[in-house]
Image 1 (cartoon, rainbow, N blue to C red):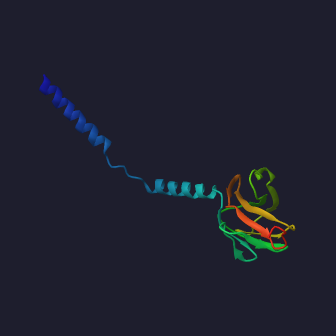
Image 2: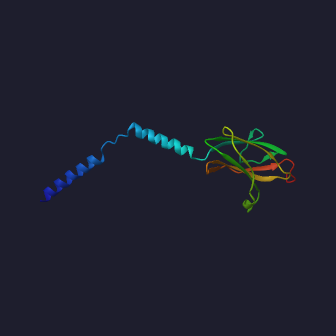
Image 3: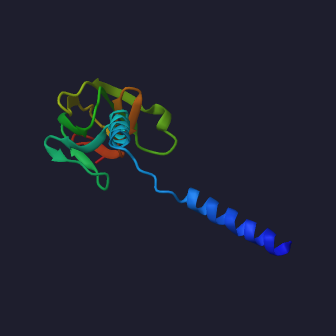
Length: 152
């Protein structure tokens, strides 16, 4: 009786193993569906911020960027983008609530441009948020100081 039990158990185990490990073929249509789903998911993501330039020079977040009375800001993006919001925030601790939207720009062929008239004595953190539909990507913070600042 015990021998018969183990024989049946082994046969059931082999049968389950064979069925569970059967080769699954993904049809060409399924592969196309996966590709379409991936492409759609990319379209719904926030745009990638490739670089931000002040007067033609790429800015970085490791040093202070000194600017004149006017600065031409150029933002290069990758992916769908309907709007770019430009913000400044005073430097210091506990001042994030004083963040100010300075402009909303509509990009043209993944380039957003704006001429910022920099107030005297400006010492701020600059950043942007680039939007695709209702999904946004925020840039790093960039320290900006005006050349005409008395804080120099």
